[in-house]
Image (cartoon, rainbow, N blue to C red; front, side):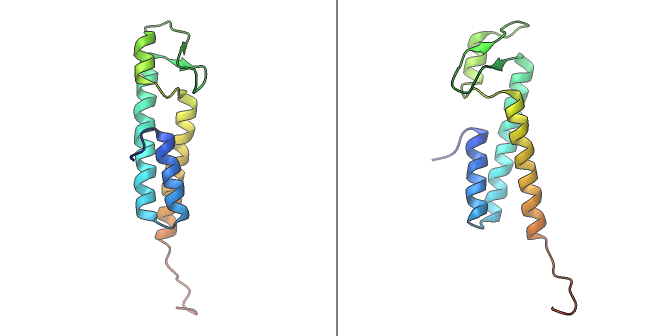
Length: 111
């Protein structure tokens, strides 16, 4: 089963990182970042804010946000702020893994 939401991709990345499958974890974190960015763009362009993840009805349907469009594009119920936080975590996780994988022991006393 392939994850769909950015949160599912992020959780997959965390699981793979714990198993020390760093290449696959980086790919999952990148997909989480990508899908979060796409949803942020959709929400920003439609100016939708959702009450909660379980409530699919948009809050404040003014300024060109049609309720049906918001529900279809944002069926998971993510807010822009949640998605930005998740995106930042995914980027930080990628940087951490790349730093770990790029570690080189430069201690000349213990080669």
